[in-house]
Length: 525
Image (cartoon, rainbow, N blue to C red):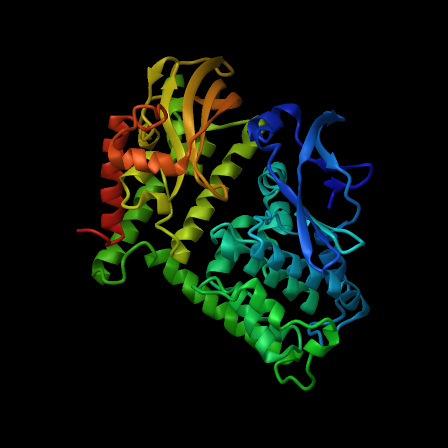
């Protein structure tokens, strides 16, 4: 776990970030986000009290957050110990490690159920964000703080600590159903339902139901296996609740296993895995080549569209060659606004900018997952979002009111596709600076609408015959927005106070983009 969480006189979260990286991640504005401690009372029920980080310090040039002491072991460490105890392909009966931690996992699920019943919105920050006390208490750490602290690490580690156990596309009411099922899957099989590879692969596995049903790895009672599988199934519209999972659990883990299960053998497992591999490959082949086209479209048009798109994408390989400093910065923010990580990556260079494209990629994956799951139509730029019917039900992430060096800029600029521009006569290694300001609008957090005013200083260098952004310093100021009041104001046309709204030109461009997008998808004529 790389000692990310350290318990002692204070509970310490080691972010691994430098002061500059910590500032860019904008964690400080969430420092007062609530976590919760769940404790048994005298009536044998869980009660909840708030907990939060209350201190920010620098240690060995890295930022650490700390809060009141809470002694215990992270659920992540417990699940790792369980996985390391596996003794074969199939779990016929539980081993001593599984028995040791069974009551802890059941108690955790009971605490989650109690929180829902009491309408306490505990954060779901994965197993790394849950500390299990020896006395049966639990600490649920604030989600956004932990998530952003992990962003500095590799995608593989972020997946292992976080995305293997939860799916951001699910509404809050359902997210713990999948998460608790994932914990049960591990303690019953000594395996992970969605093994950590990277964020994109886990998202795709979830949407395609690419996991091994629990009964192939553990000789479980069929009704329990069915409930766990249904919770993990990415195509299920209605998944079992946490309370329904508890109905099938017992205080004795041994009672959940059955003998002589015909599905529990290495040969049966091997046959299933072979069949599943073929099936998933077939699904992904068709998704890759015709997934963006409505199935009611004419087959010839589908094929032609895919071929043209592929050829054009090869021709228009992103490059900032020939772009001025202003155009390079404008292209970068246009790519960020549209979650185009290819364009974002092309505009950036150097170690100081590596984490930026990760953020864009993660948000893009969430949007794809939402669309695949049927939860809205994906993620839209702020200008596109406001033009959608029932926009409050759709995802939004992007920029508004971009100004570069005092000049209003285009958030849909497409200079970067012009590959035949002549190389600028600039000396290699020459440096420049640009100033930018904009608003970042998002509803990717668990609730509400987040609006931030960003003032940025961008450092650029002329490398390999083109301008590249090598460093970005930002000052971020949160803008308070009440979502319900804003929705009413927008529908009433009384929005003068909302200075962050897109410009008229951005709204006109967004209208054209939406018509193009939905015509391709076959949703409008």
